[in-house]
Image (tube, rainbow, N blue to C red; front, top):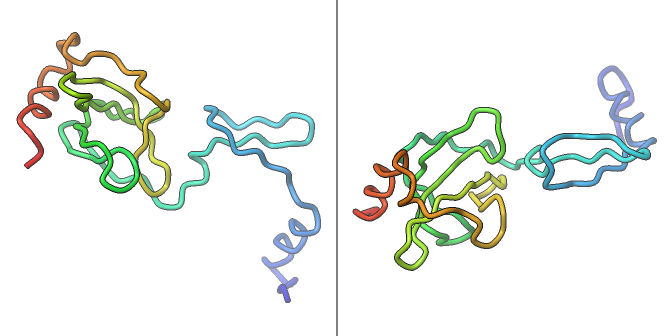
Length: 132
């Protein structure tokens, strides 16, 4: 049963005419050939946690990889830049909020060596000093 009075009517109408949607890793919503292509980040299950440069986060599900936030971008993808250790090398890479956890914006190691960037020096020091 569905209430078709007042504000319930648009819900009823939308169920009668489903809208095809394809969830993508893109950076904008687009409409082609009757299909809406929508970014994964538009379907977040929970709000992205508030973080600032210098905060520690875990990237990945479960225990994940310990990382230090180095960059917070207001309107760009990925929203965060982090430094983390891969073996003994400090790596700089972008991460996104999946709705339940942080994940690398690009799967696999695609970042650069953080030690090469003077602007990342304080975050690399924090990282190497350890989380606890």
